[in-house]
Amino acid sequence: MLACQAADTAAAQGYPAKPVRIIVPFARGRCPGSRRGGWFWGGDGAIPPGGWHSALLRLAIALFAPALLFAEAAVAQPYPSKPVRIIVPFAPGGPNDILARVIGQKLTESWGQQVIVENRAGGGTVIGTEVVAKSPPDGYNLLMVSTSHTTNPTLVRKLPFDTLRDLAPVILVASSSNVLLAHPSLPARSVKELIAVARSRPDQVAYGSGGNGTSTHLSGEMLAQMGGVKMIHVPYKGAGPATIALISGQITWMFGNAIPSVPHIKSGRLRALAVTGKQTIPALPGVPTVATTLPGFEANSWYGASVQGGTPKDVIAKLNQDIGRVLGTGDLRTRLEAEGAEPGGGSPEEFGSFFRAEIDKWAKVIKAAGIRLE
Image (cartoon, rainbow, N blue to C red; front, side, top):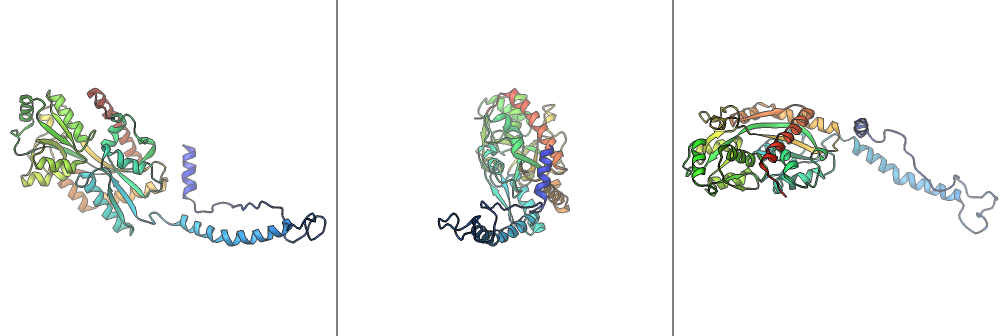
């Protein structure tokens, strides 16, 4: 711990913060000559060490002085001094993507530096996560994290990174209930009726999710277990594609996040049967909780931001402060609450504690269900 703090302090100082040495691999001297007093060293015609030293010293000053000045200026530049990238490990259109683009736009306006949102879907968030986990630890690559990042350590046999070592928590962005969404053609208007349909058609009712191991997948698995029925799981590369599949009738139901789902519900393209939290949400008045039918059922979604694990603490602190300021703006807070989400916040340490607790919680669910991904 002390070594990490010392490294962070050293990284925060401007360069050079202590004396610098230039090593010259020759004897000291400034004039031609030798110990014998002759013009040549040893009488063999070689240029004496004193002459080489004088020439090399002048050359070193000419070459290295500008470089040292440039390095000092580069280190002294405040963060961010170039464009910042936010990696979303899902396809466009899902809640991670929506939140990343809203935050990116606000940070661009605040910093005067462009914030680019890049979607790297696939592998149950592993592909996009690996990009950030193996990026330089400088804070210029952020990752939108969610439930998948706390389930993968248990679900995936061998990850190409260490989740807790290679990712550093920045801030909790938002949390919300999931919504049990149904296609209008499904002959069910409640959780009880959905279970009855599934029981009458074992292994025929298909539900979708944003990918293997996501909160929407595990919520569906939990509902099937608690309802005592068997249904077919169809994973997609993100909540966006899964929602499109549901609207088109390729699947009959899914758990979707409230943020992108509310507009589809209000337009009549999808039907809301229940929400997954302990309480109903203002954005969907009259829609009951799943726990009303299946007592004890609770599965919410959350979203956060992380960076590469070795990122200096002062950079993480600035990201936490600036993103927290964005989350506190009235228009964003009003928008999130209207769509059934609660703005996040808090310190990096608080988000880190929450993240580790989620890993432990889902590990128990996954092991009990016997789910494993290669």
